[in-house]
Length: 225
Image (tube, rainbow, N blue to C red; front, side, top):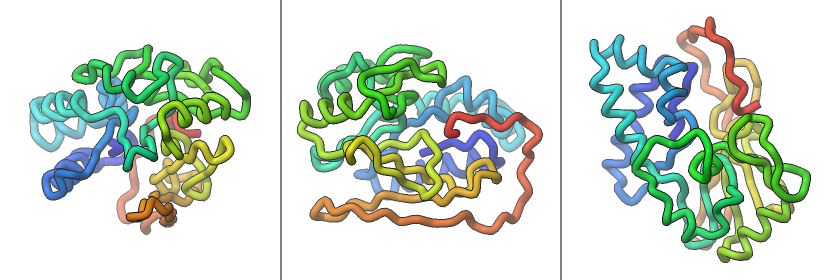
C-alpha cells in the first residue's frame, strides 16, 4: 500500500486498503516509505486528516497502524516481496523475522534498508545516493536467493517506464504501480499476478483520465526517479 504524498485522497486510499484487508483477511499489506511518519506528515497526510476530521486523532490512529504493517511478504516460499531492497545486516529470512517490527521505522539500520535499498549494476554493496539504505549488486541478490531457497525478489521503490523491469539476471524485478508518476513522468504502471503454478503475468495499465487537478505547489520529490 502506498500513501501518495501528492494526492488529496490519502485518507480514502488508506481506508480502502484497510477495508479490502478486512474483506480478504488472508491478503497481505506491507509497509512502504510513504507510511513512515515524518514523510506522510511532510507531504500532506496530516493536513488532510485535520481538514476532513477536524483533529489529529485519525492521523494518530493511522500512524499507529502503520507501525504494525509487515516489512516483507513471502509467496509460496519462493518469491520475496518488499518495498526497497536488501540489507548487509540481513542474510536470511530468519534474520528479518527476528526484527522488532512494532516501532516506527528508524532512520538507519536493517529495517530502514529494507525500505530504501536499490539494485545496482555494480557488484557488492554500495552507498545509496538516496542517503538511506544501500545499493546491492547481482552477486548479492543471487546469494540471498540461493541462501533462502528463493526464485525471485519482487520490489518497488523505483520508477520504471513500462511498469516493471527485470534486472540482475532475473534475480530481481521492480514493479511500479503508480502510472504517470507525479502527473508528469508518462510511465505505465504494472501489477505482478502470480498463478497457482507460480507462473508470472504482468498486468500493465495507463493512468485514468484526470478529473481533479492536484495541488502541485509543493516541490516534487524524487524518491522514485
